[in-house]
Length: 393
Ligand code: AMP
Image 1 (cartoon, protein in one colour):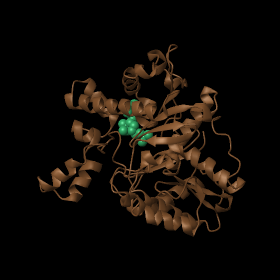
Image 2 (cartoon, helix red, strand yellow):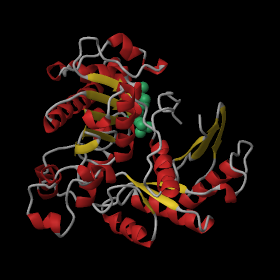
Image 3 (cartoon, protein in one colour):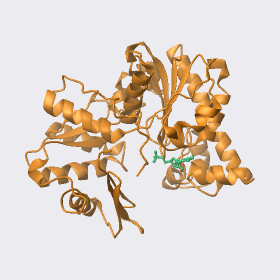
């Protein structure tokens, strides 16, 4: 397995860095106040620690970055130049939590490794193929044309990766397949992917809509916002926090934003936790149905990320309600996913159900190699190393 690292809880109590090379692992709890300090820690891990894998800065020939929001300008990843930076700054208004962190990382790389090309891999780029009837809201048209208010979609890098791996596993051309990919992590995105291109996606203009998530609400009637402001006298800031930070599994269960804990408590008889799981499963199932309708068919259903890769129960319950679409899983195979069996379909299923571990970092690295070494022309192979079910860091 290639080296992997994680720096978590930046700016919070309990911040730590975790770094693995093969089966060796270094975990360090330390105060990591901001992105800049995090960057120092990362470079130290890569170059100066006992597990260092890079001899010197000169060995770095390109750097890939996850960039959450590129607006509707980028349809693919790009080598970062001044214009790209301007667009990233312009999109801060759409992704105020994510883009500033992306920008900080890119600028720090430019400062530390001058002359090394940086590549931005946009989460939004994959969804630029969504047709306009799916991405334009039925609001006054000016809001779209003058102010950029539209569905953008997120987790495109993950979806692009798993849909390509899924085609490889199925041994069929991506161009022939209609798939729904279910990225069920801290953020949740369900994508309809037809012929390798996104044709609809569950998240919209901002990241709290679609299917409910850990602390984000998912879709609800927007009139509730007017009601909370006008009738209950809450401020808009309070309502915004409510939608992003106090809703989802946490809001319904009153216990946790972590599906593992919510599932566990539901199993032990907690009714509100059971309700949170029911709501989650229901919305996933319903979205798969609408996506299948958007594609006029469904060949494959792909589960990925946190609960998608790890929760036998969520997969089982979602699929149990999809017989009408031809989805049927083999519960014994569903239990065995961890042993490296991506296909969990029953023999009689019309739709193939797969569990594919996502690897956004690999997708970012592959795009970076493609753009820097091949000028964007030669797509490198993607699936050969993908199905190893690494322990997630
Ligand atoms: P990710 O963003 O992909 O790291 O996923 C994190 C989310 O996946 C958290 O909400 C976790 O609770 C959830 N998750 C991870 N493992 C499991 C599991 N075994 N069962 C249910 N949910 C899980």
